[in-house]
Length: 402
Image (cartoon, rainbow, N blue to C red; front, side, top):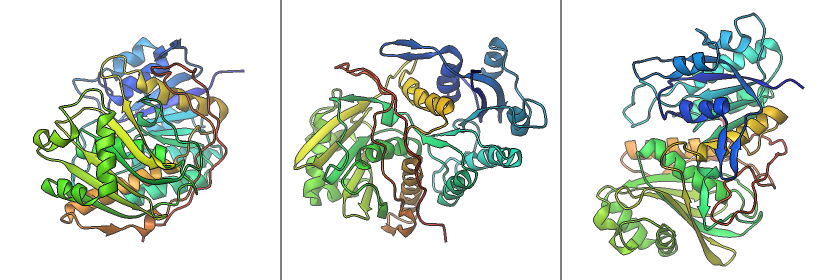
């Protein structure tokens, strides 16, 4: 059988950009705990939305004999008139795109996806598409992308590398685990890394009893209000302390965190099924992510960490899951997870912009069940072997924008 042909649609390609650490692995191979996994697909075309003095995309394309096309349509048709690829990598991260007044980077992910979907619709043939990170800064755009993918029957995946990060100790809730409350500690720029924290939270919570039914309300808190809120939340405060205990490298015990975190930020989440959760961004205290939950009657915790330097192997596990979709035509985890985290993040940034008000979010009634297998994951401190996941088809649900 011929190897699947993949088009890479990219906003900007410089060293250590997401294009570099994702597309580069599809070209060179995926470095993993158990060695280098050779690609099973071929990058056959690129489109670069922006090229500046830091660009390495053109040089990389020349190195591997990949043509760079002036439009998305030509990248998908290989310069012809008809669809000529078997899958699309949409890497809409990095580049000179403005921030809006809410602090959101206006990456043109919907626009890029709209061009891809238009070409697929015209061809009357759908191929798998992966969208790096959250779907959009806008819930309306994210909803449109999911509905368009469903309309065209596009096998669709999205999201970040955090759900495939190393977990120390390894933790994955058995399906249908009763979970009462959960907290994630995170760090980094609020929007771009807040999304990482939300995906860390959601990939755990979606496995709870009853499956996912969505989020009823979101609030963003900042500064001293974060510590005051935690002090009033006995269970979540206990879980934040437990999450901090799982972090290997941090600035002292959790009780001293306020001394090291001058500008804490919290996302307060009320799920539709009564689950209470929070994300606390603690820049200055740690540079990792940590999860804790009251699950099955006990506190369960883990640190989720990534490789801080080259070759950024955590992107190998994300990319291997995407490659599996390209090979099989079936997503390895639900895009609904990213739809929901996109909506939560947009609501949190809106809450912050409006003066930290609590926002009801009836549109975030996103219902889905996680798959019942384990995706490609790091072997971790106690190797148990990496396995593949092939998911069953998911039914998209949620609230249409008003």
